[in-house]
Image (cartoon, rainbow, N blue to C red):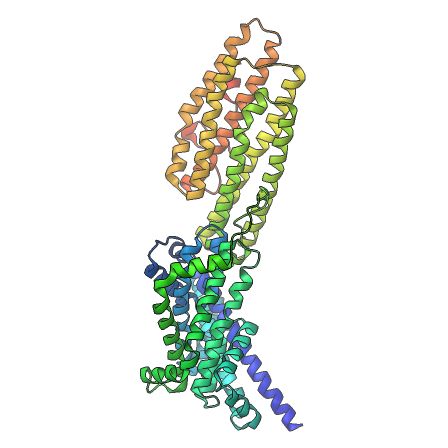
Amino acid sequence: MKEVFASFDLWSGLLGGLALFLLGMDFLTRALKRVTGDQMKIVLTRLTGNRFKGVALGAGVTAVVQSSSVTTVLIVGFISAGMMSFGQSVAVIMGADIGSTVTAQLLAFEPDAIALPLVAVGVVLQMAVADRAWQEYGRIAIGIGLIFFGMNVMGDAMAPLRDNARFLHFMISLDAAPIAILAGTGITALIQSSAATTGIMIVLAGQGVVSLDAAIGVTLGANIGTCVTALFAAIGKPREAVRAAVVHTLIKVVGVLAWVWFIPELGALAKLVAPAGGPGRALAWAHTIFNVINIVALIGFTNTLARMVERLVPDRPERVEPEGQPRYLDHSLLDTPAIALDAARREVARLARHVTHMVEAVLPVAAQGPRIGLDQLAERDHAVDQLHAALVTYLGEVSLRQLSRQQSEALVQLISVANDIEQIADLVARDVVISAQKRLDDGVVISPATLRVITRFHAKVVEAMQGVVAAIKADDPERARAVREMKVEVRALAHKAALHGVQRLTAKEPRRVKTYAREVELIEILDDIFRLARRVARAVAEGRTEAAPDAAEGGEAPDGPPDSPASENL
């Protein structure tokens, strides 16, 4: 019975310590991503073709978030969101492998004395400080403290194993490199953390329970096992995202195969680098040396690796993506709000592009088109409604995360912009359709002369919508201001079109009054679309979360279109 309880104490200590370690990693990673989210977005999405810079950036980001898996999953998300190409990702993934070695170096310090004080300081910051940034720093402290405390608990729990014959026999079996590598791969794939596997081996090596060579073999296997997370994240993603996960796995597998016969030499080199640090410190340096030498050897072959993976993961046959289905809203990005908001912005730009196509189709349908064209406009509006709903739902999920003030403002702004764009689609699908149905019911025909005037007005409105799409997509205030500055020109065209209609009231044509009514309706709809486009442009140009009336511009009402120039001439 005593042995049963002893076994229970061992396993509860081991599993409980591992749970504390993983919880600490989760606290640390989430807090670091929130603190550095905006910087990560800038760093990882504004890359050049310089592979060395890509490696440096990948290493830096991974050193910050403390997980190469997290970096690779983020990269998969970036590629899915159109924020990065597969070619750019190869060097960044290589850098992530180097950055991941920082975790092992920290674990090898084993500062047990400061583990609980760090947790205490973190809890105080969490509960006593109102500033969100300091609360995140508190979570970072809690995370680091839990990591070290978890390692200490695991070390205490496993100490009796040094006298357990069966366990020692199993540890001796790990001296066979293939077995050690398979064990490390399996453990890491199961617990989804190469840092945890490395941490356990640092504890065991430090206690003398396992040899340095066996610990290195398990750690090499952990490098392969950590790829499972990225492979899972790539399921269902675009082919380029799948390729990023595959190239991550390929780099790790090639590196392990290259070193599998040289584990004793790797251990000797690690001891030479850290002669006084003990087996735990030597293992951390072996992990670092392994990754650094691999990347130095492979960095000249990034293009070759990319081409190889492109052959391994060929493009799927092209298919038409449904307009109502989101393309960039990747839920794996939600824990990094800055990047999730950027993905949402790209989806808003895509929504605006769909609505712009609807605006382009307005004139043929409203002025001359048959009834079948009205049905096609309605179908397009259904797709816009679906995409708008997906956007609002996604942004709602982002809002549940802890956001900075700037991120909260950006979120509200995106929702406001998406709502205005969806309102433009409603104007097209509702007002244009009703006006065109009246035209068809009344049997009126818009004259060629009037159609030419309205066409020029319509072309400017379409130009404004295209400018809005470009401004949102590039997050470019200058392009948005250019749309705002179109006001005078567009209003002049609207006035000219309305005046032309008034002058033609005296024309001796059948149904002239009914024809004029349809012309005025169309001009008013186009003018309302332009006003909404300018409101979106103002939000992009000035970062406003709501469109307040602007006294300098005559007080444009934010909640509905004012009287149009056409009605002013009646």
